[in-house]
Image (cartoon, rainbow, N blue to C red):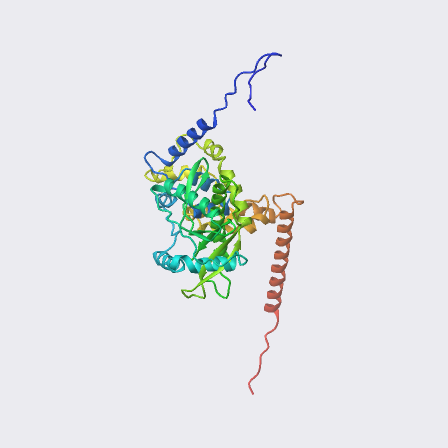
Length: 406
């Protein structure tokens, strides 16, 4: 609805809607994001890992702005004097690539066997599955070739394995090109995402934290596949149970498990919808804000501080700026550095100083459950300390028994 300043006489014709058209707003947003990134600084493309990390910390405006602008956070962290060791080691990458090659050998026979056993045991066994060539020029060409292969496979009536397809997902008005490990097309025309990881699956179970990270990453691919499916008629079904493939018991053999990513998909979709409001976040920044890594450290520190962050210990394994944000959270006494569960329990108490003041009865509403719990805890602690002091005094005053030598 348009807004009009002043009053209009009855029966007058309202003025034209001055709201910029979507194309103009998108162009202005892209220009604004380029200014934030810095002149002549190429944008760092978003990948599924980055989008999954966004979904894991949806309240962090700092990450939303930096990722939306395509800022290289690793270079920015180094320029800020807080370089991060975030990322996989070269050994882990080599081991992961070797395991993936083994799983996909012989036309992906082992991978398809696991997909049949874990995702679609009622279908015909995947004998002679198709493995289309997805080679094309550039990410746009590969994306188009993948979409064509998916459409053809959906109507083939058999098993199809797409090795490293390229998918595109609209993120804050720009395309993020994503490359899942594999996508399997079932005989009924439905699609499944395959995630191949190098962490072990021991006795049919893997590290829950690593499985959760893989599920969030797979959920991004599911969203991208749904956008491809929505353009087809009839619309193929994108399965929300993905196949996770890991080494079995620290060996080179493959083990598979079906992982339901419906929850992760919903969270990621909400966070991507929030990113479409990145225009509001960038509009609140001071004029001239720039995150180019060649700027002076003081200027970069002020620019980063202008965007609110939501640090938590989990950021250390998901964000290149985690060390910088942790140092600032410690300096500010923020309770988020103690973990999100504790932060949620403390309600509106955001700093350690506020928590201690509330516990001492100096501030806070006694009717607030968090404040009441803190005061009750402080009283119990004081009572325990008094009891310990009294016991120490009694022990010191008691006569020492002396045993005479015979």
